[in-house]
Image 1 (cartoon, helix red, strand yellow):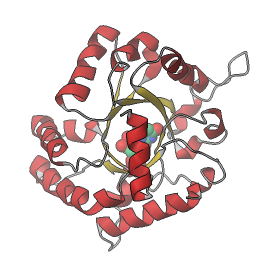
Image 2 (image 1 turned 60 degrees about the horizontal axis):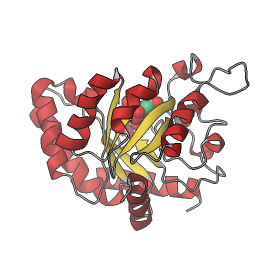
Image 3 (image 1 turned 135 degrees about the vertical axis):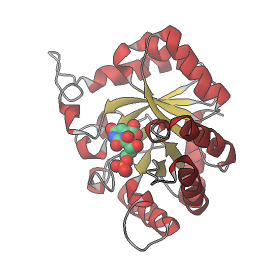
Image 4 (image 1 turned 180 degrees about the horizontal axis):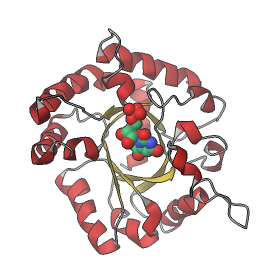
Length: 258
Ligand SMILES: O=C(O)c1cc(=O)[nH]c(=O)n1[C@@H]1O[C@H](COP(=O)(O)O)[C@@H](O)[C@H]1O
């Protein structure tokens, strides 16, 4: 089964497009504390999760022990929930082969985020993996997305459309891996309608203040997932992880008109 189909099935089974971001910020307890914390988060939220998204940075920051925690958690995660590894890798094709092998084969994650700046040959090592997906950074949620991504080219296209052209090329070539895009909710104005069919990973909700109204009436049918990390892990209210995930999943469903 292709990645997009698997994700679509998960969304249909749960009625949720919530992607639970796994970005731990432990105290003095370090990697061991992060592991126990994330075990609780995963155990309480998975039934409301269309996907989980661990971001490599938060594990690498804890050193080898942190990466080991990620490796162990990947083995423990409920098999029903696709895992998007947020790695944002970018390198020459020869090196990317090893990232692809590490993530798709050794760790067996379902999808990864990639930075497309090095062009098509840099993503090619990720394109022939049955059942896997990649998300290319198209319009990110930070203010700097205006520096390159939302600039307009002489022919009227936006720079991010050069990114979506890479996915179109992969589809035309009949590659096995599904190509989706990262579109930050905070900068999504005018973007959703230009990528009608691709699966989107949409961060920026919660702590970054993205407005779900940007999704309403977008008329999307693709298997999009909307990420919330701090809004579930560190909301600073007296709610459980489960209650927070449920509320976000419901808000997203309403915005999508599910
Ligand atoms: O690729 C991403 O997931 C990503 C892209 C982007 O444009 N903006 C963005 O915030 N992210 C990631 O999404 C998560 C957002 O976390 P919260 O702001 O805590 O919900 C972090 O892991 C970010 O690194």
